[in-house]
Length: 134
Image (cartoon, rainbow, N blue to C red):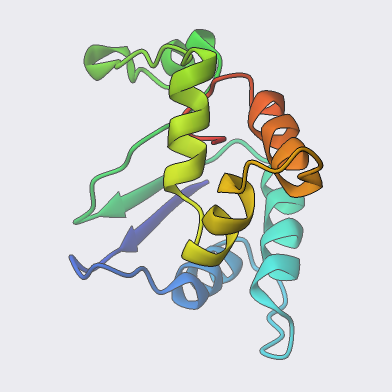
């Protein structure tokens, strides 16, 4: 199945239109009342049963994956940019830089029993130094 979708160059994608086009191309029922996330799960399930290609016209795509093999499977290795994991200090700095002012103030407090800071450090460590996760 070939699904061709014209995507405008605007900064935001019209997710509903894209989902509707895919549904129409697969002859699937459409329910306006369903939330986008539920519709997405339904479409993914339907697509896994088919061989398909989705062509998005007028858009640039960035594929992110933890596995290099995925890039080779979709022939995206020509512009492969490998992200390296960050060290503990750099991970913590990136994590702190993404917090709101209120959260940052709470985490930055250096009291001896700062549970918030301890939890924040555990969360940052659980990201394994992956910039996108942080």
